View (spheres, rainbow, N blue to C red):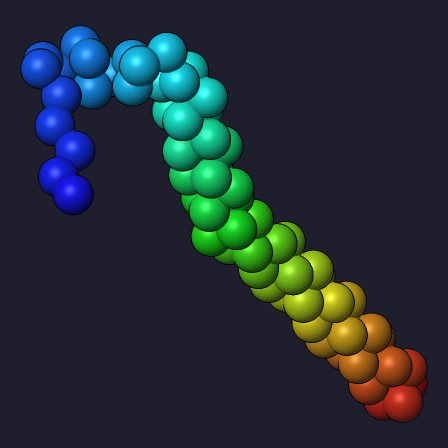
Length: 70
């Protein structure tokens, strides 16, 4: 069975069900985008936290090395 619409406007309206169909597509697309973008933001935060911790560790080791020299 082939589904055809008379015009693009009828395609968008989908016999009165267009609002539900297109909102479902929009929600699904937004969820998929969020599933891709969210880990990228989280990864950025984790990298910054690791860099901060590494700087703290470097400073701590440098200060403990200075105490041993005195």
